[in-house]
Length: 312
Picture 1 (cartoon, rainbow, N blue to C red):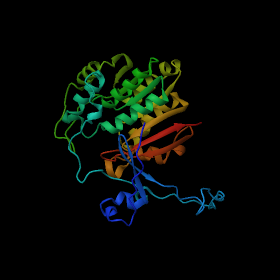
Picture 2: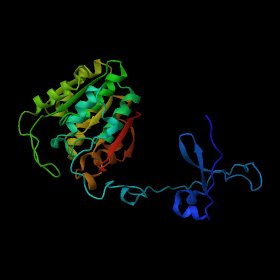
Picture 3: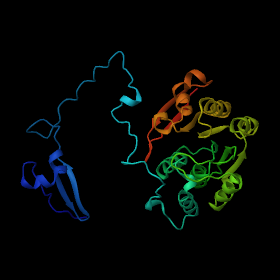
Picture 4: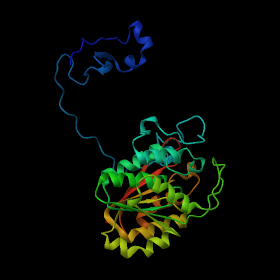
């Protein structure tokens, strides 16, 4: 590979007025055969030498380290657009005509019934990546809704290639009109979702469980234990405080240590639901196990995800 000598644009040059990206970092352009790349020259060394100074000592750690409330964090985005979106935009980089399950997802995201309650394509891709990396054999999902998150998880299980299954629980009741959704599905949701999941080509990795999610999970405890337990759960059904806890408590007895739980709609000031937030905030006082947790931001609307790992 050949390159030319870098072209330097000093911060005080007339050209820097049109290139604030260079002036901001005292950077220069390196011209490669593929185009320009910004580079910042080393600046941490001892002046007049190419050597770095002795490493600095460790910082003075305060005895008490306060935790800022969410709303006071330096970065806590609400939405990444000036106005609330009204539909999902399926990214061009996911539009692969040769991939059956991605085409099934594209069709689902185009349906007004999927907005805004389903995971966004960006959040779905993150969930898919987690399953590809964690590689669970057995997954529980509550809140199948129209099957979008189910497809993301099942596709990752298929690609893992080790026979993983997702057991998805939902009462399959009517979907009513709501904020940002002017359509409804009053009957036939079970058949609709089953058909869409089958159309994705992922059915052999999916088991649907119609009914009250917490009761149906408890009814399946023995089968889950016999299969070696659950390594990942995605809880996104009843978003009331009691409903969220019931799903968590139902899942906990079959959740392996080292296993993960993901909660959707964790920022009530943005999504309007308190349940998942209460689970995160009271996790180690209202549960049997011991857990670590982190909040994750979502785009385009930051309704929030919570990722939990069981460590005891």
